[in-house]
Image (cartoon, rainbow, N blue to C red):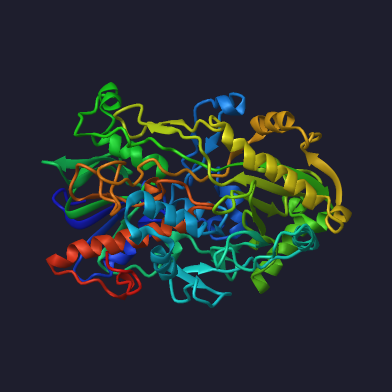
Length: 552
């Protein structure tokens, strides 16, 4: 590695946002772009197979496997937080569900920021720019992007019965959760097509422009600042050597809601008291770095059903695996193409809300614990609260970047977060008691017994078993008039030439799975950076020019 190497743009983190930023900027002629990833290459076949997330999410070769502090709101339990440590980041190990959230999520950002360019009408073109939807052609979707999106190629009687009984309860059927409305019951779309996962790396790095270089196993220790400007990064390479890489124009941090604030703190950008405590020189005193941590939490109900309606037997039956594998090879469909939910449901826990605040994932398998499926046929209904009020924090604990940060999520510290989980459990129970579903259920596996009429019993159950659904966000949130960690153009306050583009910039978490919103943020960041560089002779190409974006 050349000690004097210089790049025009350095992108830190090859995840859902970083792959997009690097790809789009590298399409500007003569712009040299370097993408650094702390994890490994994504060669493992399980990273390509949709059902493979169940094996890779908690595999330390591909996941950071962070552990939070004991959670008072969860009876003192310690929750593990897998985040992608591989090309593609968490998009390479997630459950593949493609959800943008509610239009009101982005409209509320625009109001908070005083910047209408973040409203839903104006972010929609960035979603469309990434998307290659194989099943839907309308004004809400893209068809010539790099990210494959399609409905899962798997069906069974139980899933159809769940939809039917939900509709019988008055829940509208929704053919597209990413279309005109979010509420209703229907089938999720996945970031996959023809049985292959479409991670950010597969979508945006397969046909890599010649002026983009990607390096794996490159742990960025800190961002180098000089007179208030980001001028490069210090990198810990796979051989243990520490080197410096210089940057002419911009450093873009896309390391995710946990690693991004930690990196900024190790670079001297954060709460002065924290930085002094860990022995880091204060460059910019900003307590917003690492605050405002949000996450969706879930509670689950599992039921025993016939094995033909469940994937549980795949774990113990070689014949079932052989049949599934044969079908996959010849037809690219069936059991191996399932993600973390085939059927979804979005609903309101109370009237008067701007958008649904609870989500269900219906999954055709059940687990006693991560990685260990029940020994009988089982299905799972996961209930998730979408707009949490509780807030936590991320704090570096040492000036050594190899030490994981301290994570305090403070789940259920705000009592309002119980409401969608309670009502979601009640609604799920009603659907599962429906005339079609109930015929396919033999018994309830989990919880063994619960009084759905009693809030006290429900809250006790929630505290005993609620866990993350893996959507950390908000720790470097955008703000207005100097507030927050970054401005509405994702520029870090107090530092020139430094931006953040990932889930950490969300002022409030979106209503659903966050992966697609991270890719939208990557598209938006590349568009912003290209605009800032255009004065230096760089001309954005078609991917970076969105004619539907209104002038601000």
